Each structure stands twice: as C-alpha cells, then as structure tokens.
Length: 266
Image 1 (cartoon, one colour):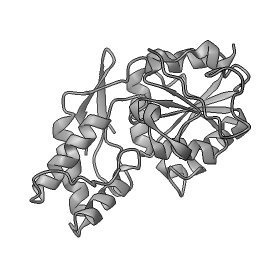
Image 2 (image 1 turned 60 degrees about the vertical axis):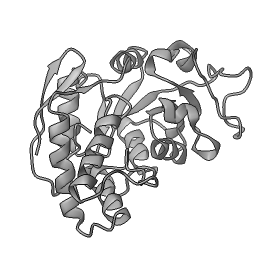
Image 3 (image 1 turned 90 degrees about the vertical axis):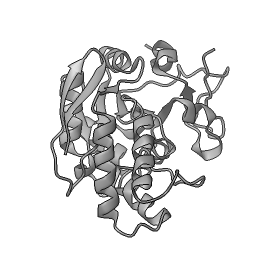
Image 4 (image 1 turned 180 degrees about the vertical axis):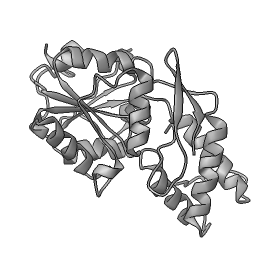
C-alpha cells in the first residue's frame, strides 16, 4: 500500500521520486453510472451531476492514487505459498482496502494459519520484495488532485495506513502542500467501511459531510463514503462493475475519463 505500516509494525518507509513512480527503498468509451435509487442523487439526463456543488474533496490512497492492487495480490499469493498452499483459494477473502493488519487477520482465519503475526510478517517480507522497484501512481490521479485543489476545494487524504505512510506519500508525490489534512488509522477507532474516517476528514476540513466528494476504488470505500453522507466517485473496474448498494454515485474507469467541470459544476 506502499505498505501501510500499522501500529506494532516495525520499519521505515523511505521513498524517492522517479517521474510518477514511487520507489520504495526500505520499508520495515467513458462510463458514467449515477445511482438512481436515492432521491437525493443526481437527476435529469444520465450522468448529469452539475447540480452538485462541493466545498471539499477526500481521496483514498491505495488503489485510488497509487496502483497497489496487483502487488498486494502477488504478496498475498507468495504469503500463502510460504505456508504450504499452492494458490489462493477461489473464495479468498477480500482484503484490499481494509488495512494491512485486518487483511492479515482475514487471511490467517480463512486458511487456518493460526498466528496473525506470522502471516503479517511474511506478507510484509513478500511485499518489500515485490515493490522494491517501485509502485506506479494511477493514471491521471496526480493531475486530478491538483485540478480539484485549483478549483478551490479543500482536500483531504483518507487512508487505512499509518501517519508515517501518508506523510511519505505526500512528500514524495509532491502533493504535501495541496492536501489540507490527512486521516490515518491513528485518527480513528473504526476503519472503512465505517463512516468514521470520512466524518473525521470533514471535521478537520471544517466542511459539512454533505458538501464533500469522495474518490474511492473499493467497495469498503464506497460504503464508507455513503455512510458518511458524502457523494462518491468510484474509480476503476470495481466501481464500474459494482451493483446494488455497493454502487458509487458516479463511476469511471480511470481518472483520465473524469470530467471535472461536469462533476464540480465550475
């Protein structure tokens, strides 16, 4: 997640810039799908959201701003193989976007591995090996963050990683001066899909939750945004394919497809 270091995990994240690639040196046809089931959602022609006016924007980190999904799955595969399994189970639990410790707990329980600490230690070792050459930022993500800030919105980074992880990302991405605040696992008692991380962000931003737009890539993130009463833009294949109550308010395959003028109405 660049590996979010959570409480009790030793190590230091040190990253260096290489264009839009984040390098880890050491670490201990456009698709719009507005929801229509809620009367408060956008009305009118499909995809029209210009009736929304936002004062602030919240960005998820892993899978939204940085491309951590593939290396995360590869690290989990290597982890279960280290415990004697040939492959991930067909019903392997969804761990991406849940935080590294909760994810290790889910894997330990699903495969009856016993020690969460042992699973976590193995996962972190495999992660370090896999991402040694760096992690790509998602296409268009940096540009959208800058454009949103330029449009006058206050911005927050909301991650299940720890504070040092978020601080490292902000520094190396060159976005430290763009975000007004960030919310990490140390700032809340409940992680996504609970609404607390986003409600805390709104509090820090000094903006009502109803005036915030959230950019997310996972179902837990979509649900957290909805629970907080915020408008959610889903980024990526999960968002585009989501259905029912897991569907974000607006879905695009990538930041590069996002029409910010249309979204922000400014």
